Length: 200
Image (cartoon, rainbow, N blue to C red):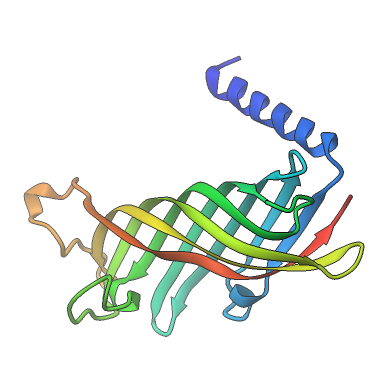
């Protein structure tokens, strides 16, 4: 058995212990991102009375949105602390996330990307996230509740720039075609209103 399979089995074993060792497991759906047809789903598992672990995924698969691609995937494993316990009330969490994207620079806010970019200028690459999440959870009844949250930190990206029309590199000289551009920003990059269902 190779090292990758061993690591997968260890992670699965730890997750299953956490799943059954504590009575609270929640399935979640972000209502805000759903409005723009970008699903964000997650699962949160109680570890102790004050600590939990959440894994959530956001994905957009638009090959063409307003004439340009809008594709991204974000995965966030996060440990959370609830001062009041019982996975309710205010909480703070720390995460290290991973993402892939194919976007146009014209979609970025001006405080991130300066300049006049057209829909033809496409970026494709990967990024990592390191940050915190602050939020508030409220149980509405025995099974259902809602969560309001906002997360941010640093986003570090490695990407290549292409022409969306003819698929050629536009961002670096021809002799550096194998290289990646790099960028890093401090910004909010996740948030919304989650509706959750408590399974146990």
